[in-house]
Image (cartoon, rainbow, N blue to C red; front, side):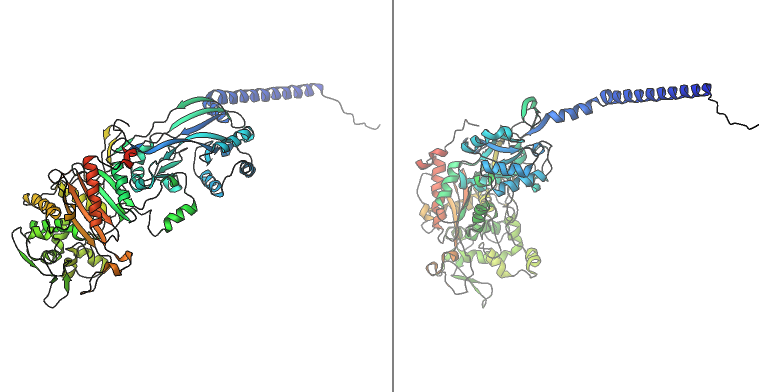
Length: 627
C-alpha cells in the first residue's frame, strides 16, 4: 500500500500568530502616537518661544534706528554743523530674489553710478543685522523720487526712506576746525559698536566731529515692523526711539574765524586765536580749506584727486600739523629763559654788532640789521628784535636749558585737549640730534635755535598757546575747542592736564616781558610800530622765518627770488595788554614782510574787542539764546 503525504492547517496556531501581530501593531501605533504627542508637546510648550520668534522673523523685521547727530554751535549760538532731511533709495538684500535683475531695473529708472553700486556691494558683504536696509543712492531729487514711487510696488526689497544727513553751512573756512563726517568703512567699524551703528550712514572723521564722535552720535533705537511676503512694511509693532547725540557749544567765534580766513587773502597760512583766561580756541584757521560737504556722502574720485593733488595742500591742516621755524617770535621766551637760569639780566648791556662769532675766526652769524644796533639791554633786544643778542645768549646757555624751559610752554609736545592729529613739532636737544643724525650737538646749532631757526620747528597751535601763557603771565591753559557738552562744561579725561602754570623764580619778569612786547608796538624803533594807535594797548612780536639757507655773506633779496623762496611772515600778540581777552598767532607762508600778519592781527583785535566786524559778516552773528 502506497503512502500519501497529506498537509493539515493549524487554525489555532494561525489565530495566535494573528493576535500577536495585531497586538504588536497596536503597540507600535500607540508608541508612535505617544512620540508624536511628546514631540508636539516639546514644540508647542517647551520650545514655544523659540518657534514663536522664528515665526515672527518671517513676518517681523527688526531695524536699527540711527539717532539724530548732535549739533555743533559756535560761542554765539550759530549752528556750524547741522542735520538736514533727505530721501534715500534703500534695499533689503534678503528680500531681493534676483539682485542683478534688480540692478538693471533700477538703473533703467534713475541714474545709479558704478561707485554707488560698488559701495552697496561692499556694505552688503560686511557684518550687519539681517533684514537691515542698505542705502543705495542718497539725496534723491524730487524727480528721481517720483520715478521710483511709480514702480515701487513691484520692486521687492526696495524702499525710499527719509534720513538725516550732515550739513556744514559755512564751508571751507571751518573745515579744518569742525572737521567732517564720512561714510562708515570697515576700518571705522573696528573701533565702534557694530550693532549701535547698524543703519548709520556716516561717522566723524576729523576735527571736532571726529574727536567727539561718541558724544555726537547718541544711542541707536530699534523698530519692529510687520511685513508681508514681499518685504513691504504693513505696520509698526514696536518702537524704541533713539537718543539724540549731545550738542556741542564751542569757544569758536564764527565771525572771527571767517574774517581771519578772508584776511589771509591769496596766501596760504594759518591763524590761531585763543582766550587767555580759559584756553578756549576762538579761531583755528588753515588756508586753503575745502568744502566738507563733499565728504558727507562720499566724495567722487575726481573731486578727491583734485584736492589731493593741489600744490596748495587744502587737505593739510596747517594749524595743527604745519611745521614752521618760530623765528623771532621765540625771542620773548628766550629772554625769560636767560633770566630764569641767570644767563642774562635786565640791566646788563651788550654791544650788538651786525654779526656774531662763536670763535674770532669762525663763521659770522648775521643780524637782520647789517650795521648793528649798538649798545642795547635785554628790553631793547626784544623791541628791536636784535638777532646777535640771542645768538650770544643761546651760545652761553647751550641747548639743555633752552630745551627744558621752552618745553614748559608746550613746544615739542602735544598741547590740544580735544582735537586729534596735532604734530609735536621739533624742540631739539643733544639727545634728539644724536638719535636723528648720529651726530653730536654743536654750539652753532644752539646759536640758530636762539633765534627760532635751525632744527626748531613749531606748529601754529603751539606758538599760539605759548603766546597765551605769556598774555596770562604764566597761567598755561591747554587749548580746547569745546566749552560745553549740552549744558554741562566739557570734561577732558585724556591727554595733557587742563592747566600747567609756569612759575618763574622772579614772577616780576612776566610784567617786564609784557612791557617789552608792548614797546615793540609803541616804541619808534619797535618792529611792530605800524600798529600804534587805538584805544587799547597791544603786546606783540614780529618774526620772519627763512625757508632756505643763505651763505655767510649773502644778503636776502626778495625781489630776485621766486615767491616760494620768500620768508614766512609771522606775528604773535595779545590785547589789551593789562588784562588780555585774546591772544593770537598768524603766519603768511612766503609772505616776506611781517607787516602782513601784524596788520591782520590788528584788524582781528579791533573786530573782536569792539564787536565791530564788517557788515558782510552779519550773517554769522548767531543768537546766544539758541541751542
